[in-house]
Length: 483
Image 1 (cartoon, rainbow, N blue to C red):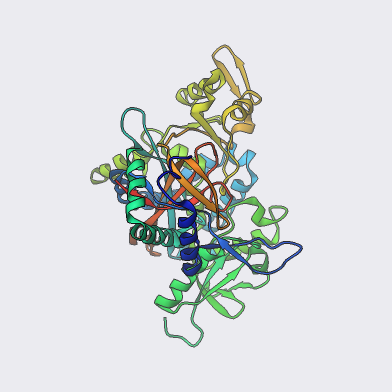
Image 2 (cartoon, one colour):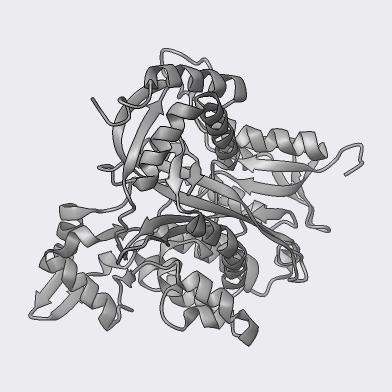
């Protein structure tokens, strides 16, 4: 009998959890099949109970969110830095990043009056910095896994998961408290502007998106329209005089991307209709979330470059900003270049992998969505097949330029009951990844209007699972039980 089963009636709790989830919209849309075109919903992947999380480190993630928001804004406005970081080997080996960078220069850097509306547009960021707890001694500290600047999901469902855990924790207070103790140890207008959600065809994480849509209507009476990039190409236009973005006859005030972060969102070729739609959106006066600069600021290569000594100071040069720099730097894990800009420290980490230390690292490409990383022996083989080694001398293949090498993080394990599709998937040791949301609004004059921490996301998976996305089927939604 598992440690959890000896303390809790997980079947009874699962029934309660499913009932709460159904009544409160903690769901994902089931993929349509050839046999059925019905829109059916399933319970979202979730942890049956909250996961213990050190309160001090949770607060650190909340407190540092505005600094990372500001960092993204400043990086996005530094065309020279973005070109230096992404315009060499990364763009050569990664056509997708190269295309985003090309559009960025076309819209925001090149001297063209046609792009004046875009350059004068406000900027909106809904960002999420993801962390894992890691210990090099006796205490665990948060270390940044990545900084998400586009399609940062689960802000809607995460709040509902926490509400479910509060309900269960009060309904089964005695039983759950015993379990948690165990884990502790371990506008007015006839035709008002709209908000445009850019989404993927066949999206299953629609409930999380709809929660934001409903909130916009309930709170501000702002309507949302959902469109794919493919469909938008034939429905968009930009007013040549004002730069207003029109979807058919309605002006679009804000463009919110829940798609467009992967090559698969753009069909075939770099001059396809989806890319044309992205350019049309970006060249307008509408506020983009994210704009191209924010998108590029969230790439893995930029993350790695920002972790180098002295680079943060480029963006925070004032003496009264040293605390921000220090707070962000404590969150950085070890990050190493695999391109022609590799330093002696980067090469030393690569040698460590080649000499049998692959378990201490993960190899990451410039991709979002989960499932693209290399671990363990696959990581070692990927490097060995792309490196010529003569003694201590290493010659790196240009094929590695699109990757970064990252220190692998080892969070504390704790017991969990994980559910998927409304059923208990299993019980056992689990690890968690904390996401800290941040919201940022910058006016067309460059002044920051709003910059705040905006909530959390905790994802839990079984210990033996390498990848961590919920929508991609690796992890579940949870909430933190601060201790």
